[in-house]
Length: 184
Image (cartoon, rainbow, N blue to C red):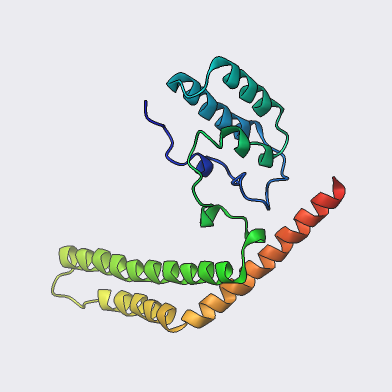
């Protein structure tokens, strides 16, 4: 029987292997992911009944995310932490820079498809309804193309603004985590 999920760790909202979230309380959904791995391993014959019962009991008693990975460490591949799943509070300056550049690339892609899509729609309408008349789709094309050029030309501004936004968000997450740890 083949494993259903190629990456068990991607099933968690916060990767329990990440030391920055290991102290967070585990939810029922988090424990269910581990329980499903154990059930699958038992059904495949990778665990005997005693091991299955022992690990299932430990799963049900787990209070934090950090207690979950050792229960399945010998049953699932230990893939690297997924960058997108890393909480912003654990992100380095290089990670934040990378995320900001990804945002710019996303903005650039959206501007390009906005230009392309608006051109296709408006020229199709013009060709069907008004062929031979004033080519008004040119106005739409010029505006959409100017937006595309603006996004390309203001890469550094977009990236810098996104870095500042992510740094503020990271500071808030760290502050909230510290308050939570002091409150425990």
